[in-house]
Amino acid sequence: MPVAVDMKGRSVLVTGAASGLGRATALTLAEWGADLCLVDVNAAGLTDASGEIRSLGGRSEFLALDLAKPENCRAAVEKASEAFGRLDALCNVAGMLVFSHATEMSVSNWEKTVAINLSAPFFLIQAAIPHLLEANGAVVNVTSSAAFVGEAYLAAYCATKAGLTHMTKALAMEYAHQPIRFNAVAPGGMMTGIVNGMTMPDDADFSLISRFTGLRGMVEVKDVAEMVAFLASPAAGSYHGACISIDKGITAG
Image 1 (cartoon, one colour):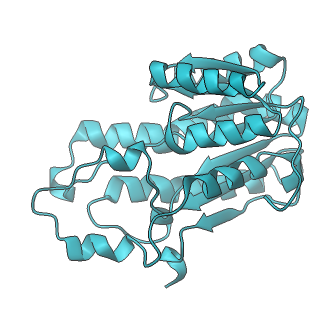
Image 2: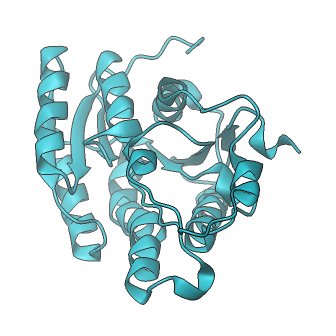
């Protein structure tokens, strides 16, 4: 980042931290001096990520749980605040994506997508707000370019990311006069686990899919991770209610 960022003495909760963007965000924050509480359903990935942070000289705690359950969201915030005696930022990075024809989308996949991409960030924020108000802290939600352009076979994903983007703005307005910041980052396609593990419908029309693949290729995970980490820091004090697009021009036109 062009701005010097110092996160020493600050505690950050990062979801989806076992791999991909969540892990890259946590490592960036660790390099800037933050104490990290990592949350993901992937226990082995969390162990590796926590070890990597400690190898950098940082402090890290982790909690493996399913954020689709609201009570686990509350437990994650409690763990983060207790681990280091404070909570300065919440980075909602965890997400899921299921390609499906609208007529073939299962109830379980719809509900799981909504739970992970939209409900979990809300319940994490709800639990974190008292701690973040005390710390003059920040929330950073990872949405997507899919929040702004319709993407074939991704009705659930698009709906949840658009909802998370607008929820960020609603919370920014609700807390406009209080010492807490709400912002979002909307990346385009990145080479992460969420992409590597996805499957398309057998009869997918790739002329539709190519409309949101981008003319300049995939987005660099590091670029997005640094923006998420920056918005979580005091250096981003003038950002409130913003949604920063990092998509190599996908949403430009």
